[in-house]
Image (tube, rainbow, N blue to C red):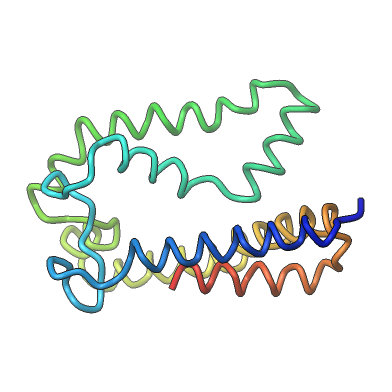
Length: 173
């Protein structure tokens, strides 16, 4: 596959647009505490559909786009039951568990573990999931994304991994 100059310009303009919108949307606001974001709660100005859409969008990455699509091609649509089940669980959590957590001002799982079992368990769990995410999820996501970039552009895998990491890091921060 060969990309023309117009294709490359469109991709660069799109990536720049996404970064600018992200900076604009997440910029400092008077009602936001300095140094951190206010969690999206029932008192937030966001409608329910925006919060729900962001939950689903935050769960979609290269592993879903490439891995699940490829698996669905080989095995059939039943592979999507993994995501459908997750959506059903989110509804149950939102209906029954979330109100209890919000009433107790608990916004993260490490916060819950600290209150229930102590700070040591909170740190163990947070460290475990951080290490697992970095060495399992993030590496797979970057490799799959780089594979897609390589397929479309012909750019080698390692430069693609580095570019995707820099783009995602800039977007996230």
